[in-house]
Length: 171
Image (tube, rainbow, N blue to C red):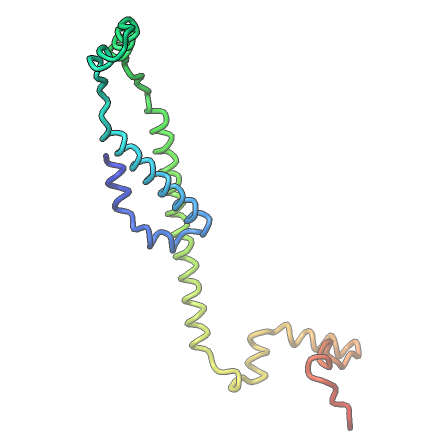
């Protein structure tokens, strides 16, 4: 009974937004099968399961068959299965799933924190129009090294510049 209370407390719409799409599809299929099984079980519980042997005694000539059937039905005892192993496996699976979900939430929170820091850094930076060459050199010192190496080699053109911006050697 406690599992049905826990299942009712789940906010499925919020959960479906946070989970991967294939997991949401699997959960929806499972919920659909579960609801169908509950519906069929409810219908079966409502059905009458008693057998009117007196009616069959009046209709049938062979009373021995009715006696055998009555003896078989009255002697029938349903087999009780030990579900502890399956329930413990389900509980272990649930515990693993919850711990994995908690780890995922923690990872997402860390990523969100990094993204918010990056966004605030972008929003707080100066516009590109206000940057100077000295600012770029301070931010990326390897640019200076690359330019010096190119000049030592006698390479005065930048690869891909003409393709991107066109050739200005018309003069």
